[in-house]
Amino acid sequence: MSGPILHAWLLSGLGLGILLLGGDLLVRGAVNLSLRLGVPALIVSLTIVAFGTSAPELLISIKAVMDGLPGIALGNVIGSNTANILLVLGLPAMMATLHTSECNTRRTYQFMILSSLLFIALATRDVFDKLAGLLLLGALVVVLTDAFRTARRHQRAGEHDDLEDIDEADPDMPYWRIALYLLLGLIALPVGANLLIEYASQIARTYGISDAVIGLTLVALGTSLPELATTVMAVLRRQADVALGNVIGSNIFNLLGIIGVASLVGPIRVDPEFLEFDLWVMLAVSLLLIPFVYFGRDITRRWGVVLTVLYVVYILAILK
Image 1 (cartoon, rainbow, N blue to C red):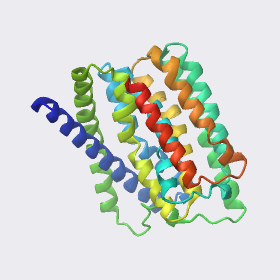
Image 2 (tube, helix red, strand yellow; image 1 turned 90 degrees about the vertical axis):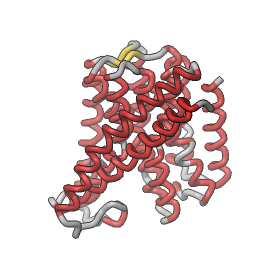
Image 3 (spheres, rainbow, N blue to C red; image 1 turned 180 degrees about the vertical axis):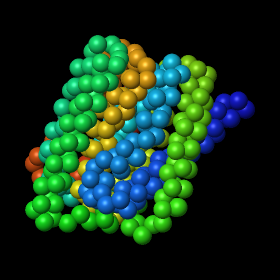
Image 4 (tube, rainbow, N blue to C red; image 1 turned 120 degrees about the horizontal axis):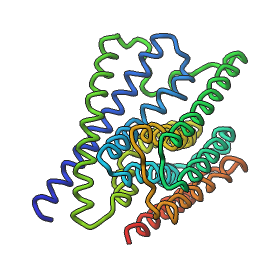
């Protein structure tokens, strides 16, 4: 590997690390600020944590659109959603069975499938423009409104929000530390995004790989690391509902929020390869969750192997 290429790989990795650190700091600051202001923990987990863990994808997509690299913007979201299901659920399930039979995620799963269908329908227009962005963000408002109403019903029914379910929650955190987390997160995110986009696109040009493939693989896999870390911790704590809910919620926000915002920054042209293959793989992979959501099946170690192998096959297919 020549010096310039090694340099590009190292700086891409540095950018990814800074990006992930910035997202973690932003989540910690936002969660604790909300809790100090009296916002219910369940609402925090459904909104601010979802936004915070998707912040790397959001910054990457906005930066890619501004730099005229729509393949990275779309590939990041589509690849992340595929990785979230096959890899983020598959790898932890190989460690220990995810007892998803005990979870009730049907409603949010239905929203995820509807979000995927809306996303694909808009992609057939060959561009995500401001109209598409507004439609996606409008759908996100509907999802968040439903989540808020559900949380309120749980509260009125006397169900208790468990702050321990949110790793970043510290009700006694001083305001100066919250402000420091928010400031460092807001600084680190754009710095990391700039580094990762610049040098990932340089790697793509060097190897003759399209921006779309780089978005689907290197960038998507990297920005899925927060979800993977969250899911591994949920498995260790035997919280399958947190693991499955994290993946479903992240996928909804990726489709509706990230491309919704990014398409308001500038038009995102849809590479024909996405419509021919990758979007349909994303939808098919989403449908693989039906046995676990509707029929009380656990994601066993065997299923973990199957999901992980499918992800490897998918990556090999798009790298051909």
